[in-house]
Image 1 (cartoon, rainbow, N blue to C red):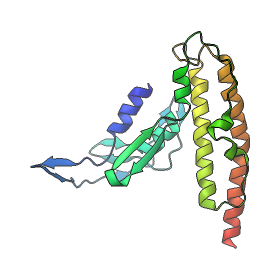
Image 2: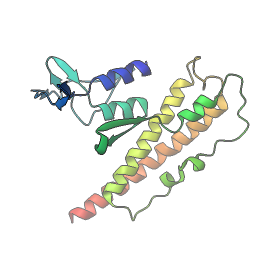
Image 3: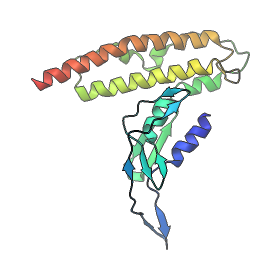
Image 4: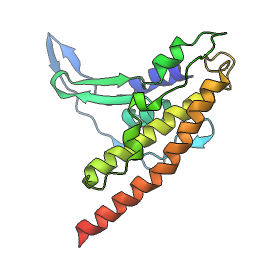
Length: 195
């Protein structure tokens, strides 16, 4: 499902350069935004910040939002090379190192993965920085949710490691508890800036 979805998402990029006689030109298009189009993943409606675009009777979805919200991957844009860079979250290498029958003999230390910054509410941050922190926490929550889903699939490396999965569940709950504190800080900063 994820491989299909990733292939679909990459296929929905709106502008495609057209090469003719060694020169790259861009085709002019007419399109319209349709905020009425809904996206459902595993029977759950996705709340998209950007509305889908309809062009030539095809619907184009925002790549960044889908990849980050559905797959938990990180998406970056490299202007110099005009490249969309999609990076798996930092939990995937851990998953890939697990083999059936392995015993996880050490405790997972999320501090080693930089999670401590999420739990120290820094009131000196500007609203833009707080918004970025909120996005990072939401991304981590989605990554942990993907581990929870994978743990129910017998084909997944997480399936045979309930202790490992439990550590992700506990950390996910901590992230969910701290998220409203960051949101409250953002709201307070925004109100203070309005005065």
